[in-house]
Length: 120
Image 1: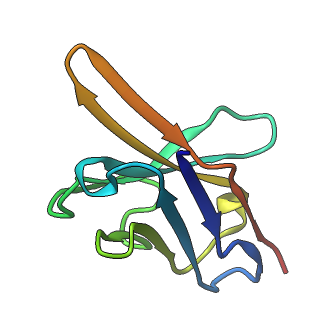
Image 2 (image 1 turned 45 degrees about the vertical axis):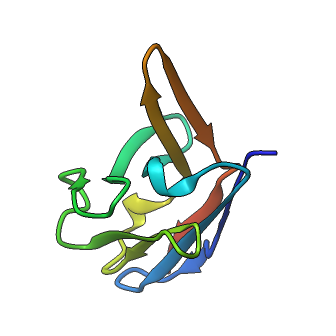
């Protein structure tokens, strides 16, 4: 059974930090690229950060560059998102995704999301 389970969300003051985790099971995590998305109320889901299967290549949305860091531990089947200098506009539900393309099939797995609220 494929599962992605996010944790680490919560309420934090502006300028604070949170570390999100996403634990994977039921598939070969180490061959999947993974990413973090977020969705704020009334807005579309947007890509926050992505990391290649081996952890070498990372990409970030302009809005989080220099503040957020994505990483992964394939031995623990877990991807992380370290979020520093948080702003109220970072408030959203954060989702992790694992994806792999093995022609002709694309595999996409999503977690259920974790709420991050940045407020004083």
